[in-house]
Image 1 (cartoon, helix red, strand yellow):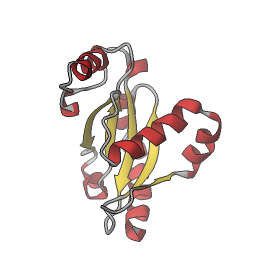
Image 2 (cartoon, rainbow, N blue to C red):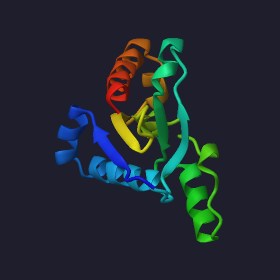
Image 3 (cartoon, rainbow, N blue to C red):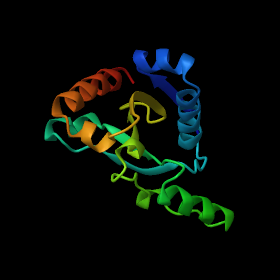
Length: 148
């Protein structure tokens, strides 16, 4: 297996220097891509709106809040030795401050290279409905994918 490499958008790189949670989140993302089970990572899927961003392979992982039901269920399942499939683990959209997502893309030529574009620390689903924001993230993803 090739080494997993994680690149960060420059704004995140700056925030990571001072934000312990973000630093751990990025470390855990790399470990996840290397095959580790990260208990607070939930569903991982692509964005499909607006339709113009689909080819950019803009992806996200739901980041479960420690007080969420999904997180508690996953913790209990791990203790039983039978972790749940993260695909079914979603953020609590009824609590916007707990609706979090890590947005990234994957290299086109090198599928072990990841570019973390943004972290929505609250209201993730609402932020993802902003077409202008998503098109901007897709542009960044396309630039990365043209190199890697």
